[in-house]
Length: 220
Length: 220
DNA sequence: CTTCAAAATATTGTATGCAATAGCCCAACG
DNA sequence: CGTTGGGCTATTGCATACAATATTTTGAAG
Image 1 (cartoon, protein in one colour):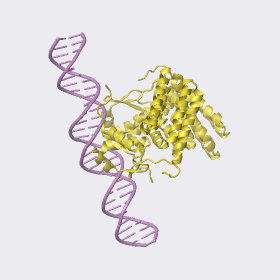
Image 2 (cartoon, rainbow over the protein chains, first blue to last red; image 1 turned 45 degrees about the horizontal axis):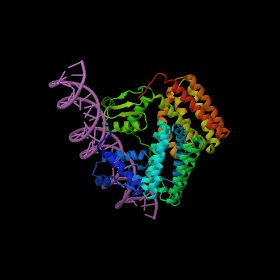
Image 3 (cartoon, rainbow over the protein chains, first blue to last red; image 1 turned 30 degrees about the vertical axis):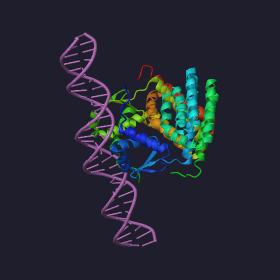
């Protein structure tokens, strides 16, 4: 067995901070007080700083030198850029993945999306978002391109924040579910061009929904 | 002034290891003995491990749990994947960058490529490679997409290794220089489609040159 | 000679102390 | 009233000690 029976402190801290950020509990720009958090979590500086360092590299928090840690705030432009990049990467993933899809894979996608819709209907947005994420991660995996998978994984948390924001609109969540079904239909038909185009449109739609919520904000 | 007058140990270690790896001094798969290196560099474990952790995230070394640090080895497939991704990302960068190019930018590109060719002719492959890298980095910068710039930066070191390998063939280096000139010509004409296509062809050419050197190797 | 378990060893995770450095505050001065 | 500079504080970099865990080696039993 290779899985650690016991999470390290570093990992627990990491997960905890991620949870607080993606849930919206810690909004953009919030300072993360090292002393307060290490005392609250009963850990020393070492694993705390390591976890925060990782988060910083993943673009979830920013380190202002000699001034501490802050939850990262995204400018409107940064959000736009992130989703433009995501569009490029995920379309690439789709193009690589479709030829690798067996009927078994298609069935797996169906199950994922079914779960998502079920969660959405019962109002469980957390599960809905999680299934959505798995949908995209599975496509990436099927691309078989390790460098691409790695790159998308690195962006996953930033994207997750966007997902939480966008899904605040049930209207959008509903539409997105339909879009994913359409993508799956293109998978079934092994129609690469169509699947890629639908994915681009889907991500553009998410982008729009996230930017919608940025009317007021002016970050950095 | 914001630049540190004095590099931190972590940074010095990082730079030193990078230098040793990209120069080929430490070939693929070489174990990095923590005790030996910390003694040689006269530093403690803390900055050493931090530097190595960063390198690992950048894919230059791999950490085999409880067995130490090793210079990362790439399988043929991983190299292929890396360059397929690079193609996608750099073509995207070109498409974004071309509309932002002023005559001043074009002139800057000319200078960069002139320097590169001068270096190549005098046999200074290190400078040649460095200018090549600047060429690509400048395009990324001009794209104006922060997420894309960040992503390409993360891959830069892996790409740098490939560059060193590919440029061992002077024949290839010569051809690559011509290809970059062609790309620049497309920039001058503000021909986005052509610039993008030439960039794809250029990177495919590098990919081929690197893979050429992988005949024998079987990594991981 | 093979197998298995326990001891020896190496790596990793965590806590903590100390020194260096940068940012902040405020008072003294122009 | 603005500016300057010095002391205070928080953050950071580094070293080191110790505990926990995984791997490797050893050695004895079958």
